[in-house]
Image (spheres, rainbow, N blue to C red):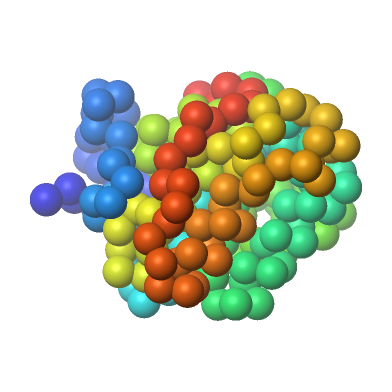
Length: 202
């Protein structure tokens, strides 16, 4: 059974960093457990969200593929719609210090306020432990965890791999569709896709 990752624990962090790429989670299997600290110093454990749908969104505010969704407010509206329906939405930044997109907790809070984020919490992950645990490769890279704790979706936010906001209207948003399927008690029709965007700056 996969042990829970607790950011700040040297042993757990070393385990996560040493984990091979093949250890990335598999859709249909239990999502890797974690306990993380958000930009306000509050802890969040996957175990605490049992019975709720959870979205993990990898971000980097300097990435044009992230800007594609944030500048027109599309990501914020998706976050708002999901959280209104009881979904837990964690925005994760695995950018390492000195790398593009890295922010301190205080800077993350300022950015959330300025951009109108509607996620449940912003998770700074400067060591990349949570990112490596989930095999996050791009920004954005999206994961949806079903209420029973299984990973229900992993991949891109949509089916149109460009950095152009004008393309959003014609795209199929895989995350929105996965959340609708889960809410209706249906299997997720598209459980995986190839993520696109900027590389996560570990």
